[in-house]
Length: 115
Length: 412
Image (tube, rainbow over all chains, first blue to last red; front, top):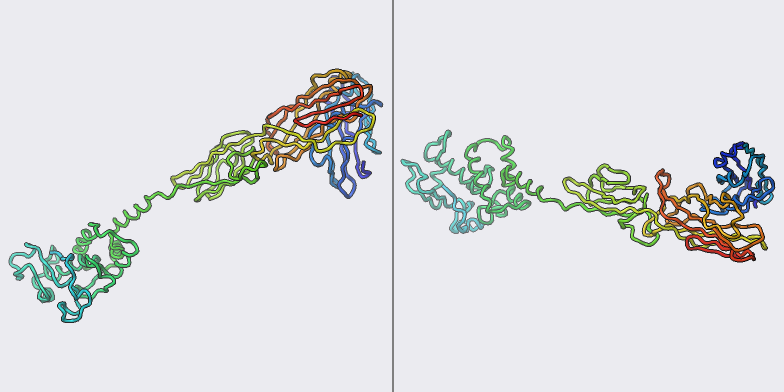
């Protein structure tokens, strides 16, 4: 991954009831901080929840139509995407430590799921 | 009294030499005036109805007989005036004995003045038109002394050799000749990827077409935008966001021309593998990146966007039953992506890069509804459903993926 890429995990909301998992969305925003266009290699981004790989994230980020910004991110430009993965990620109430890793980049978020 | 304009001219009318039969400086038209029987009032000093040579002129110049300004005067002067009017086919005050231009005086019927000749050349009048002389004679006889300036209608009549009513009828006759009906040509702004000509009348939703009329007029469209346009020869029109049959109408005066346009929507998706990502050796997984084409390619969908609709996995079997339905749910790109003018552009990523061992046969698929819309438009519709199938075929972890005609397979 390019060292000029700045990627952030976006989880919304940070606190939700188990019954409201369908409204939860998780995604990322990646920004090219460099001076040249880059391929951010977003398909290699891996999400873990409490240390467990989230396979639903893999299927989401590795499938579907993509436009040119997905593979050619211009300087100063950003690309973002999110999916409603609450049902797949939260099987029961609790506190979830979410870690997004892309190359050397790491972004963390915490989500509390109440009964 | 009438003028015999049908007889063959004598040498005088041909500019013959003096003394050669005619009277020098005089035209043959004036050589013979014939008064019809009964035209001479009883008691008149004229004793014969035919005057030959120049003898008749003595009487004329001497104004034999008394002039009666209040009625149908039969004095020689008035008689001469009538003759002039009839013989010269115009009201100008041309003396009876004036030498006329041969250019204007040739031909039967006595010709006319130069103006009349010029007018006739520009707008020929059928010599058989009976109204011309028939209407001039009374006009001349009723007000022979009025200046031309006071009679604009008559002046106009004199120049054209026709009376105003007849001119109007002639003009109306010309206007009544319908102009050729208008025609419409059209050209799409974008070429069809399949090679159809830009004059095609089947276009994609949101396509822009430039119509050109053979004449300026008002434009209307039964669909798309704009619905109407101010008068002009061109009409830039955008096809509606949904399939339709649209009639484009150009109205020029009372005539119209129409062009039928068929607007179609995307109906198919096809994919061809373009590349794949390198995957971790020893780990099962599969990947294909495809170039996507929206069809038909007989039109351009360059102003159209595409969206895959989320949905559950189906046909889950074997190895893949270890995953929850929520995990296998299809969550594609939630944003619309736009086709380019060649009906391509977006790429599709169909992959699962790494799955956990142990491996065993199994599979699942997504039935993916696809939607289209005109770029930026709120209206959207489904047009085709694609199937994306994942399979693991052996315990070695060989995986395959297929979608819309494209497929890939990999053994770890």
